[in-house]
Image (cartoon, rainbow, N blue to C red; front, side):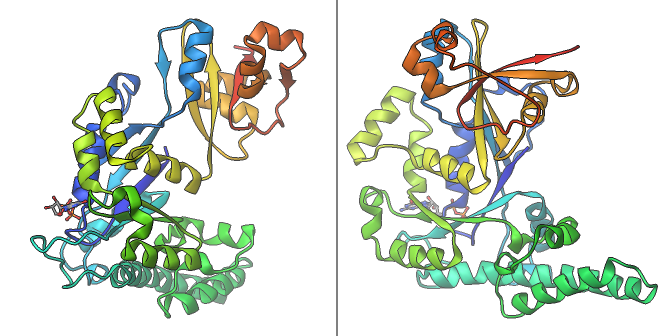
Length: 365
Ligand code: GDP
């Protein structure tokens, strides 16, 4: 299960945004086997293709795919030294697959900023420094162990040490580990360290409700964007306050409210889409009279493993996948028409699934 951790300094709008996420929450009935902790929000991934498939297959059941967000509270200056909720915070963040940092870009004199005046770069740097320090700690512990292994003549240990040294040099300058050039093998050697600064990152610029429609004009957003470009990270602008209001409304009213604000989509939708991209995820679809459903896989997943998402039997007994791309299906109008035109392909176990593959798995039970 892929998760995005939401971090940020106190009073930047994290809880407000996270509440919007949990309120907008996915239909619990779709995820009966998930126990959801209070700091985890599960949301449906918006997908315009689903309603079209529902119509085409004349089905009533439609199950979108979902994403998990984790509210990681308690990050303050000094967290890596165990101040406040520091250590617990760090344990949480090691488990997520990507990090979304909420950055305060709204002015409000009634809401104090923990560090004084509004300054998004300083906020980003504080969090970055804490994460680098925590990773440095992890790294140093590992180096001690690897040093011992080297003495015993372990073959892999010197290679690992070389990678650790490379990363350490960066962390000591408060630069994230993701900046290190690593081969896949090298990354594999240190994968179990779960370095936090190795995780992909996204910035959520929280702007005030009257600026959200023209967030690009906001000076603070511009600053965050400039920084993000250097980091190779993405920025989305949202108004946490607007999101929390939208979450209270029925779908139709929410649309109207967005339109009034001059917005095409909610910040939450933007966040979900950006996170999906950040994590390198794609969606494949299953469709029939019983149900239409979207499934999340990592880019590069092969057909049998994609089938395994549905049921382990499919992966084990995989024969073939019958696949038509969503676009071909829509152009021809039905799966039969697509079949007649030769657009339904039979793919084997080396096939790499593509986004929008409408798939039927054949397998031995
Ligand atoms: P957290 O400490 O980061 O979780 O911050 P909160 O979500 O508790 O927000 C801190 C305060 O900022 C609360 O009083 C929110 O109502 C307010 N706030 C959050 N987002 C916005 C926003 O977009 N505009 C304005 N004006 N206030 C906001």
